[in-house]
Amino acid sequence: MAIDVKQIGDKVGRESAVINLIRSEIHKVIVGQEELIDGLILALLCNSHVLIEGVPGLAKTLSVTTLAKMIQATFKRIQFTPDLLPADVVGTLIYNPKTGEFTTKKGPIFANIILADEINRAPAKVQSALLEAMQERQVTIGDKSYVLDDPFMVMATQNPIEQEGTYPLPEAQVDRFMFKIRVSYPNKSQEHEILKKMARSNPELGVNPILAPDDIRRLRALADEIYMDEKIEEYIVNLVEASRNPEGFSMNIGQYIRYGASPRASIFLAMASKANALVEGRGYVTPQDVKTIAMNILRHRIILTYEAEAEEKTSEDIVREILQNVDVP
Image 1: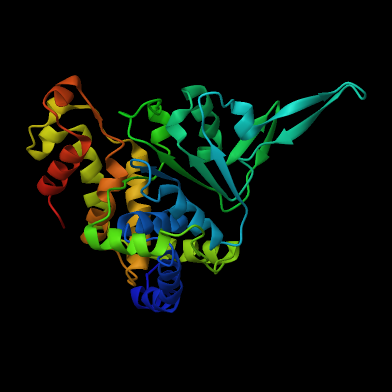
Image 2: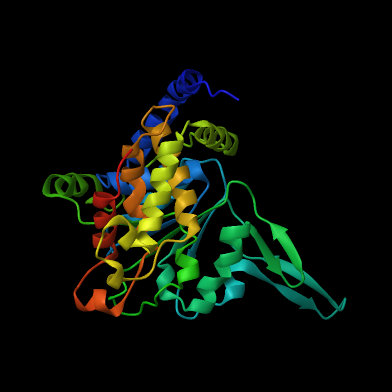
């Protein structure tokens, strides 16, 4: 079946006002942090999850709560602590001695948007409580499974692993996040604007609820329609293959890579590239769309060797090398 790129472009043009409105509403509260805001919007369009890493005080939690206020949907915040239990997240069965029966008490995971705040301050057994919910979008309590609402997104914040009281996230957990976004300090002018906006006892940070779940589903369906040429698909596959077999692309970095990116990387690169094209107001994907989102999708999926750590190589260094050496269509 022939794909009418012009027709898709016309649809994108009609929806571009909504995307711009989302951005402008978030910027009523958040100063700067363009990469973080774009990542949250792309994850919303792809129905996927985001991991945000940065030192305390960089508006990670505020960004997520601001986005949640713009959506007419349920929102729950879970503060991850060392003494948190899996039942505190997903729920549990409670025994009633009068009736001799068990009743289900659902946990905070039963909401449209979940803020998993400081997720790496809880041990692995608690973090793993999110695995089924993030992948299958259901939760099993006892012997019964409960389907989660649509949309369902986990937006997690974490402190750098070098900080006191943090646990490393399991690879299976990290791989379920579409994006891992690193948040850095604002520049001088942005810091000045933050000071003027926030340096008061009760800063006014109101945003308007502008999106309903139906609007999100409509935008998500439009993102799926964005045209992607087969050459772009091959480019995505080559990027992921280069993380597993760099020698095949004339790169001498194989000694630094223990595990390359999983097949989820290919899927997420394709989905996020389409969503990025939608955000940019186009009905088709370009190689630049792939490059724009590649770092945030690949950085947490490439596991390094001890040799890489000894030579102070980071996963970002490996991704940059791959993007520079894989031929662009």
